[in-house]
Image (tube, rainbow, N blue to C red; front, side, top):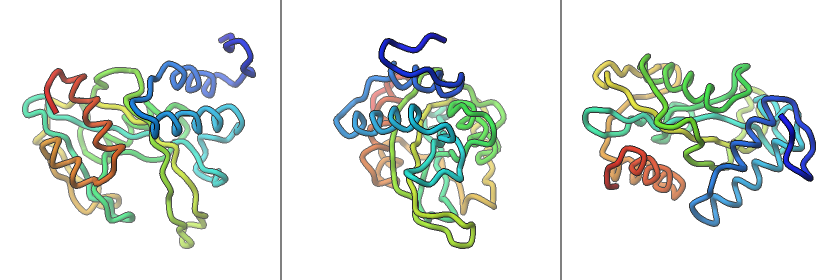
Length: 199
């Protein structure tokens, strides 16, 4: 892949992510700042996908899962962080946030039939993660690349007890309130447009 004029050549996974980020249109100033931070990271850090890269952090992939039948979104009560979140997590060799998001979504929801609503990035968000001395992890940031997916087997959802305190299918407004952060509301509104339904 030939890099855009003025940009350095990267290895194939980083070049693919950079191209996807450049194609992504931020919805507001906060998302634009986060996209710019992601572009800086993918360009400057060869180990940007590794969970051991703590300064400033590393890429993660996450996915908002929607029921094809009801339009509700599935959230899990994250065991370590104590918050209601979409499914997602660390790269495990994919070097591709979309692949990471789908794998994590399937593992954390028990839903094997997830299909992305679009191969394009839904939303981007950079957020702080507290240190975890028991895991040898410093405080760092997750550079989270977010996608949306749909399932036709919502009743088959099962929590991964190692990761979640529970799962719940929620109307999108309730999900935004429970997550309690502007980036979640923004991403859910974008997903509603992909689904062709009002938020």
